Image 1 (spheres, rainbow, N blue to C red):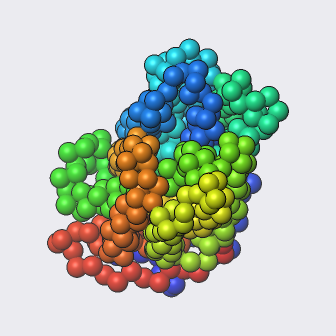
Image 2 (tube, one colour):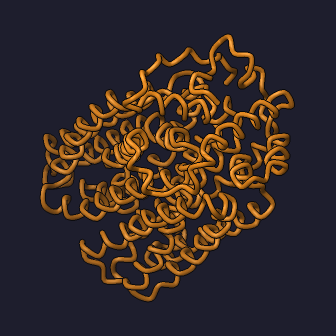
Length: 493
């Protein structure tokens, strides 16, 4: 395919504006994103369990950070390994293996006799979480029609926040009915159920047409396209996939040394930046430590657990808003809205916790606690309504087909390492500089993130993955005169 073959309003080929999404692709997305549900539950459940496991496992501030962040450290390597093996083994097979790891990790953490075993099985869970975060968006992006890719990939984010909300409800429910001190193990064990459902469901799903084509299995690629596309779109998309892969065939298997290619190196750095700025907002300190923070500003355990459910509800509702916005505005605009809004909310939380008194008439200032909660809810509105959905979508779109697994794994590895460092450091930050100091630091980092967003985020809306690849090659190649990006075809959301 020539570099000049972009989708323009006068193109004779390309996604049909009247394309309907075949029902089967929705079934595939719903089953695959159970990985996102597990991702959300396993990262969210620890927030409530930490309030109760401390006495039994003899946790200190440092081991509290280790228990929380060990999952994130495992996730970094899970993303890296799954990205590397996804090209060889296939996206589907990797997700099936991850489902087994989710089940083993959930049972292991629920039965852990001491902090060492807890950390070990949290690492196992982390490998599964990281692998799902790197593989599921790619699987859906490669199997979805171009005009529905944004909404279907964003279903992953909806399932993540739904998993977190279920974790918060589970935590509060177990504590209200049986007492969290006795049932925190059941909080952790519940994650086994969706893990089994993911394993069973994926056994009946196909791999992606792009992976089949990459392996020379064109008949299978065609069959998947026929089941997931309108009839008129099958031929042109299969042709586009074949032509793009033909250009890359002489290059052999993808290798990390190809990062020496200037445009690929720049693209990889942009991908890392997209992944890392989502974490540098400090979002997961709120998702993991919300009850800890709220008890620190005067709430009781019961009130903090109940209030944390509001975080989950807002996250789910705003993700629906994000899915709707992706059908209306560009990716670049959404990243700007999310980054600028999150940064402003971080400074708001810092200012509230710094300026308002800790006690009133010798009692904890309840208003201060609820104002901090308000700041969290505003922050999550921008994070989950704009920044997080478009982050996963951009990562699934911007990397070339041939290098997508490796690059996605590397970018998500960087994301989880950033998440690990922030989550490990947060209890220590809270103890040393207080809540206000911690959020002022996150706010300052957010300013640098906003500069990156303005300068480096590309627009990819309403283009096939192959068209995005050709555009980004020309944009980032020093020896190519960058052509203005053509106006995309107007498609139905």
